[in-house]
Length: 150
Image 1 (cartoon, one colour):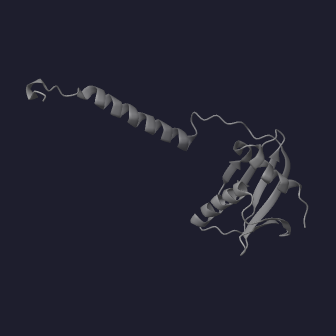
Image 2 (cartoon, one colour):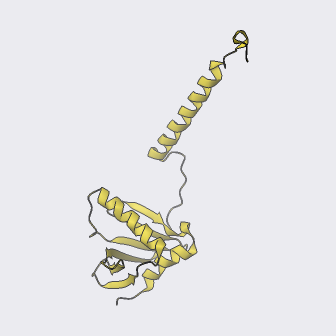
Image 3 (cartoon, rainbow, N blue to C red):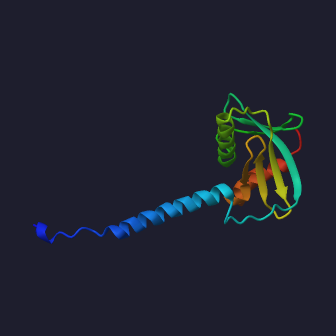
């Protein structure tokens, strides 16, 4: 057993110093996130192709991809296929629902001169740089730029 007479408490100064350091780090990260201080961004390259798209869920589990300007069918995403596109669009739709925005405003798919591909939701100002998810996932969206109306 330990002898209570030999008990030495941990010094308070290092604990207080650690707490202050943690609080400062959290505050600095929050301020940087809100103000953009300390962030580096590259300007967008020129747009080489752009397409407005709307997505509609169908009763059979498929998703209709429609041209955002005239409503014509671009392609159908069959049930159980193209999980990345499904997940991306469901996430964007969930954000719209949480803000009370319907499915009517189209999304913008933008191809850039430097090869980057951006999906933009003008209704929520949410932006997804698709090349960040790898070439296979970005290619699923890139195909939508070249498919003609059906």
